[in-house]
Length: 293
Length: 221
Image 1 (cartoon, rainbow over the protein chains, first blue to last red):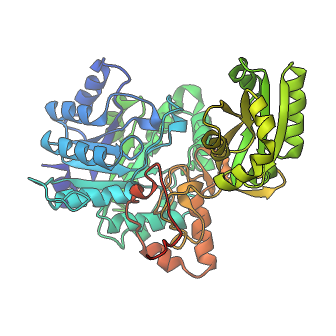
Image 2: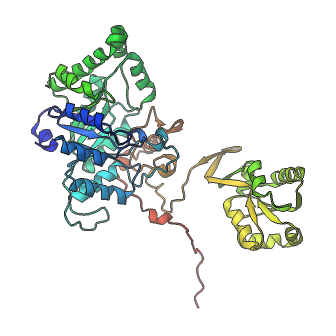
Image 3: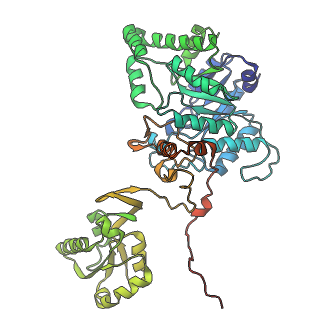
């Protein structure tokens, strides 16, 4: 069953993330794909994440298809103008890629080519409209396509953005622009997330809560201080501290599993998106602890 | 105004190392306000060049250096000083430099400044970029704050996920343009208008270079 069908069926879905490597050795990445195969409903393939140059998302999505996984093509507006984006979307379509996640993209100043010219010819809301247009047989200039695309398009949202109101405005614009599903920035406070979901439930979209596993109290503090839109509550930091160095990761996995279980049992959202960031091998175990396997 | 800053003096010296005599041309408008091309800076440059063993045949601060015909008329009394100079150093923006290039076809012209951006002077000698000269103003839709300029990504429909406590992901010194726009529209009671408007992808053909404009009405025959 396709990711779209699974999500629409009402099943609590799980997506994970695969970051393409920098270089042509994809053996470790393939190993991660094999670990996730048959367990997750789809895998996101990041697009030069953090503006660090790597293998392109589309090629890795194709590899994922060949390995029996359903890919979600992450597409940022940082590196391609409207011609490049549309051309790549058509290309992704003929390769059999069905899902696309439309994002603005981290600024080049975050990455490893700081002197690059950032593009941002269009942005996430407009990219969603472009996908909708291609699905309806026309390019963004209104020219007829010989054969249209059939993408299931999604977007991202930061439920704990500060300030939140402008973020919610953009969320609604994304819904209007055709986003069918949302994957969120990592969340750590379920009560706050419930507040966001009360708002999100007013719209006909599916929401997958984002998770980044905490490896230590230090990591939690780092996220709080450095990553926009992430706020790890003090009690979780205390819990990690109390676990001690050796058991911190195990506790972090427990926290994630506990949160996922709660989201599922209380029917708070439609699924979860686990961003393992170098710990892809732990995803099946987290899913097991959350009662998803 | 056009914000300029002085080039590194050694870089300038390298550029002009093959010449001995110079005419210095400043500008009384932006470059004077930026402290890069007014009387005091021309005097400083004259002294610095002379200290390097160079000759300065004359100096002049044009009224408006980017006004080609006006500058041509103003420079007439300086004809001898200019012809004695092997080259001209222009201490204004790139537009002023190219006025000199247009007026003196056979003379090398060198810029003393780097042209930075179109900006506002917020305090003495402090400048902020406010306008990108995109050719199709959208300030009417964004509460008078330009996201094409104030947002490093030039986003048109709201903040990205990189907004942290109201500041930009690329620097905590930059306030998120979209938080500013949102707050201003809220203050003006126009939030609904902002939320209901999705701006289309910008038509960048309006900034296709080189741009020209004929604003005067041609006389009817």
